[in-house]
Image 1 (cartoon, one colour):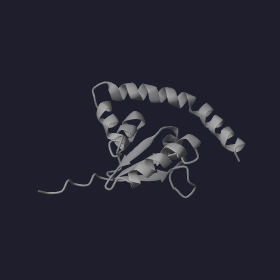
Image 2 (cartoon, rainbow, N blue to C red):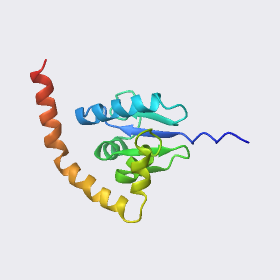
Image 3 (cartoon, rainbow, N blue to C red):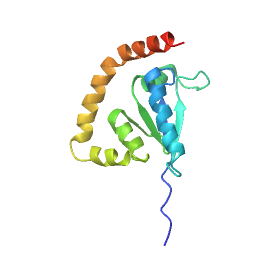
Length: 132
């Protein structure tokens, strides 16, 4: 019997300058490192050494994205579902999200979060500066 094929690489493109993103991605990286064969890589697109056109960087920083090995990208709820499918303890949520109608509902919720994100980021930054 053949061993299951390793999943193709999936690169999580995230905003490392965002305190909310930093916290979530740190957690997800820990899960990925503990899961042999997750196929997840993480790339901070806010980092100065990441070379790309500024319009592309702005688009990547505005929403959550993952990039497949072929270079195609998923964003928003679809990107979260693709990442969750690779992580232990989160695969059940990816399966649930694939039920017809659920991912579009998650996208609506994510868009609502994006409207609140600047205020939440400011609150997180203030909280961090108060603890230093």
